[in-house]
Image (cartoon, rainbow, N blue to C red; front, side, top):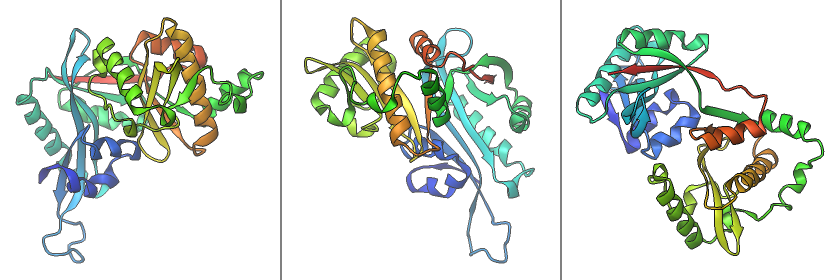
Length: 302
């Protein structure tokens, strides 16, 4: 039985969802469909009990490129069937439900990205059977770890990480920025970059120490915002500047947040980046010139 998982319904499906994706579901940013089934061990099951047999996460987004002009697309983020329920048609039931969503949606099709790893080969084969056509692309999604920070610090041996938080070139953590000034700057950034229109103007939404702003004469001129996905996972959601010298200020923001990440988060912490803009790609290459972007298998279904 396929259900739309909303609010408290999502709890039963959390064991099938990676930890760094769970907050996207709980916040409603991503939609969740789940498959419920009878327990495998019927003898110990309660009467009428159902368990999570599979889950599918997706979102509908505007301005997504399917290789041509930007369009409205459904993005398939995750599909998983519990080990005890595989080879029972549950994956097909979930995909049939998603294809029904597409029929009633203004979206042009469904996109999904499958990593280049043998553990995902079966996922690609499953989606190909469903009619997805795959191309190889360079991933704009990057995950940075403490090891990346250590390697950068080694290469910049003259730079003492502990000094970066005091010599901050006007950078301040978001928790020290007045909410009204934050909203004023964010409004100006949204007017400048419409793709940021949907993000929250509540500063409490963001991690208050890793997120930071450059302040000049009491006003924000550049801003970097991170969401806390879990105790160990963070997502960059905005990096933008209103300054006449954006490259310099964004570099200062990255340096500062990098020092906070290195010094104040757990050892196995990770930051997820989306390098959608040319500026983002350029800054990433500046800080991590030897880091190659991963290749992905991008699937398209119409």
